[in-house]
Image (cartoon, rainbow, N blue to C red; front, side, top):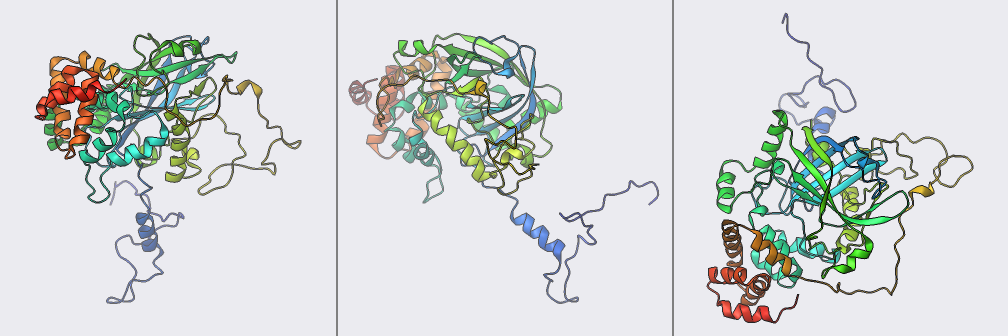
Length: 491
């Protein structure tokens, strides 16, 4: 047809042109389909393999590209080049829900993941956190149990408050996280309308090898806006993809979302000055001032969600010079687990994919493995060697941690399981407290085992008497009996 745009010719994966994409090859008009139809076979083979294993947690997510601009000189704290004043570093961010599956509603009560990949000049740094500043547990050995309790039951495929409150009734340190999760902060109005937190303490290390402990906080320039349970339910009936849709639309319309990055700092000698363990991820650092480091702007949506958002491989082990893991027991487990998960889910060469590939040159003797698209050449794949100039550099050694004592398996000594939950409860508005009590009563009311229910109620009562009493009354449980239970608990 005159004037029509010329069309590209469809090809198979080997680049060969396709002659017919509408009909399979058959043995005559009424005969069977032929195995020699390589185009048909390839289409079906590729279709059968379109899914990589879903993330066990953080399966539902949305991503965006942007830039982080550093604004503060913190050279006395860290040698990390990403914090050079005025420097702009490209980033990719993936927001997510935690417990439910890949296409689950974004209106569900759930922590939200907030993972940022900084493509720095000295390698990729992944700051992998959540919208809420604390977590349920403090030791990685309980992470599989916790997730199993929150996931659908193996016999019914239904999430069940009887299961996860059974678990949490044995985990008093979860009281703080449960209180925040069942508040309206557990149902953010949108990904761009929530804060982010590192949850864990990390270390910043300066050029002299001196380190401090830090916690990171992303403050939404748009402000924090949440949904009540009623609002979330009404919204879910209309659009259960609201958070992803809103993020994409804001970027498409040029209203680029921004977050300011703040850091709290503690010197090593300050750790023992608190009546809780600052490396406990169930705690916030109350009273420790924040310092602004810079601002992140998200300004580009992915061109392909699978290739970018779903294949994005975040791991707390992706650290750069000047930033190290602390001794936080949960973080120590995540440093292994997340990278290991990505190797299983995406592949051993996942970091060669464009969304994961460092912007600086990778010089490594790690080799081979499935789907290796690297450009390795030469005969020397080891170090040291007289035949190659590649070597390590002592200036990038890890900081030195003084140690004493013996190996052990024991809980931390300063638990303080309940106080911060009460402080958060009292910080809420009257409407916020009412919603929190109503939300908790809705799920605790489904728990059939009275011992489980009353144990959890005692946790909340220990955090704040009015808080525990209100939930007990909502469940028609005698508050006096819960008070007696709470009196036997220690922080």
